[in-house]
Length: 275
Image 1 (cartoon, rainbow, N blue to C red):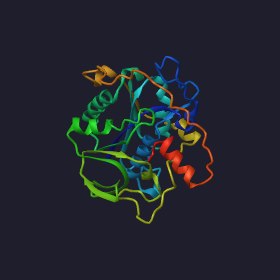
Image 2 (tube, one colour):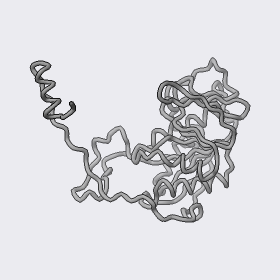
Image 3 (tube, rainbow, N blue to C red):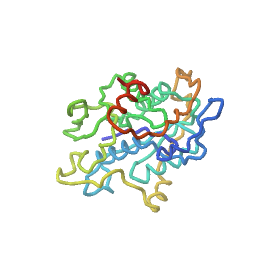
Image 4 (cartoon, one colour):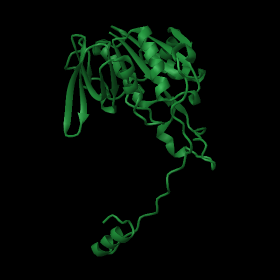
């Protein structure tokens, strides 16, 4: 099985309180935040690794995992991290963030999917900086492939994937035959969420994503890498989305204690206007 996994370099979402918005609202200042792989994309890489291995012999890859990103040279460190966890090779499409929107990213991934011919494209359901949740859907439409979004469980059956999507009121199970696009949610990295046909159903993974050791990072630097130009994979690079202004969230007032229910109802009605 061959799996293509797109990843994105984002500002550390765990320290989002350090984000600053200049007075002119022209941009978001993330200079105080350390860059890291988008968490949902890390889940996608972990999913791809589980689907191309016997969990009991995780160092033996029984398929190919290709990681791709669109970004500047600084993104190489995130690619190295993914290679160190077990991915086989990587592709970087050289571009700056201000050259990209979801539609352009999907166009680039379409070109790469047609070139690489993976069985599946597995990606995070969204990037934590933009939270648009649209690239996977754009890509599936452009390729004409079936897709499943916000997937929490995956079991391989005869080369097809039986996926569980959490929906209102329960879980819906779908069977996807290759080629297809899958976007994953955070529960996909639970110990029993993903099984390849080679992994015993009694096997349990560690919770979350696997981390790269220092020796693995050293070895990862020798794995195959390819750099492409944006114009090589995108025919129309005109932006369709423009951010015109950013504003910080309104600072919430401190809460107050009320003496009784009557005062609470009065405040809800006359101040919060919730009644």
